[in-house]
Image 1 (cartoon, rainbow, N blue to C red):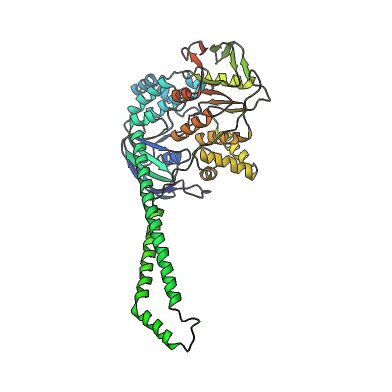
Image 2 (tube, helix red, strand yellow):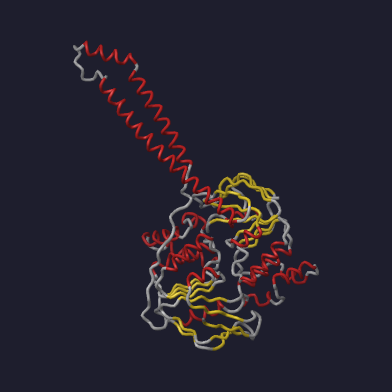
Length: 496
């Protein structure tokens, strides 16, 4: 079992805590962990696995295996995994479609293939606690089904950070929702939890509306009572009164003794206290967790007839393998979806296209994986911009669903955050062509929706490689589909 008791965590440079006063209990079975990019999901997993220490509070039962988002490096213990006589190893190799030569050609593997080997070794180690960070990123539909089946056999305490709603609903008995450093544990899959979160938010909005109406009415009554009290004070004041006017002084003294005006002042004080309590209630009913989101990107329509031409032929995909392509043409208005199984050369094809683009063509290219070093460098470049430009970039970054303050204090953009940063920075690029390789990888559910809205309004050419069929159907008109066995000598691309 795993217990978080009043746990808070912040980095040395933090202005705000990443996680604050979190208490929750986790038992065998999968618990989903969800939240916007930058909300502390990875930090939470690393606390659970014992890789970070809580600044306040305690984490008991911590320790286990953390499986990171990135697939840059070959997993530890891969030699032991392949040489293990344990029957469980063979089952995992078969279940995940792992091939024995993958470690020897790691650099040529797709990120989806790397992820499957990473997960296979993690499950083979049978840790009591397994913390998975985005296990289905990079995976095609068939590979996702393989991974879901493999994860379903795990019997320990599982924490699953994912933006894959189907996977969370299939595996998780509970979901932990992270919002602005706070955590709420809800029973059921993520769809049930999101529906409950929406219901609670609407209830808070109704309550706040009612409290605001009551406050407005009470404030008007209190102000009217204040004017009556002020008028009474002025009426019974002896200031500027003729010292010889003893009769009027006596009337004032008599009125004061009658207590009518004192009662009026007491009523005003009582109403003022009610108003203060109502203000406190309003302050406690916050609906600021959902800020206004969405941006517009400035793009251009190129005057060129053709932005890029890929001649027909075979593009090498490694030793004795190739991608057979017809002539491929990208026109200024094209909206192209590139799809195909893992390992069939989608990223290789995009790299070839980028290399053939005219030097003067403004292009926004976001690759499938951005290393930690590249992410830090991109953030450093943005921080060197003028104050005005930097403010505009971070404003757009915020409206894509992430907090610039948390980004700056962490000093390392998460994979989802770096994509948003590059999109926000494109304000100065005015691209005529946008190429994105698996753009929805690492992005939270809300950010995927925002990205769809942004791209749908653009006037430039789009080339999107993705396994997200819904995302592609919303944004594309032309289909480039790679077909054939991923490990066969040749795969072919067809245009529809």
